[in-house]
Image 1 (cartoon, each protein chain N blue to C red):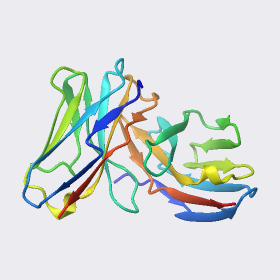
Image 2 (tube, chains in turn green, yellow):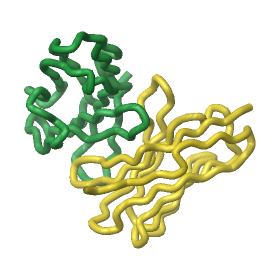
Image 3 (cartoon, one colour):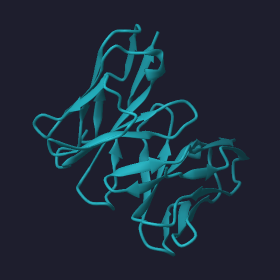
Image 4 (cartoon, rainbow over the protein chains, first blue to last red):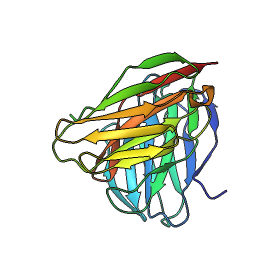
Length: 114
Length: 110
């Protein structure tokens, strides 16, 4: 399968714990995006990378969130000191560079914070 | 704040019905309008990327139109089937990112 993959698919954690998610993009794509989707809403942009450079971060991305793409391939999204409000579906997407290119999405990681 | 609005929020139709949804977006600084279909437990699937005013695109029984001057796009499904049941999302391309509407949840009953 050459699509976007995400791991884990589900994560249940207790409030205050740290969690890390991984995204593997389509191999030839140089852009990688993170979105968050909560119930009844569309996905909301969090951040994106071009190769290893983080080009934009949303105001939604508080200091507890950090994303990396160290070698310009896979990416990780870490949430420190999780809160119940962090419960959501975290989606990763990748694309080629350019404003018209399709973003291809992974299946998401469903986070539940108890 | 850039708003992308979709209507209706949900739709229940019978198999064989044709249906359509609306996406409204800012008409200034337009780059592209994307449509996605998102089935439960699967990845969102790209349907169309629309870039030019007056664009009409078709994929099987699904088609879409674009009016960038007035800031809206319509998605049509002809002869809905139960496998069309999903959430349909539109997204406005802004620089590198997509701004999504809240989606239209379609349920097609056999």
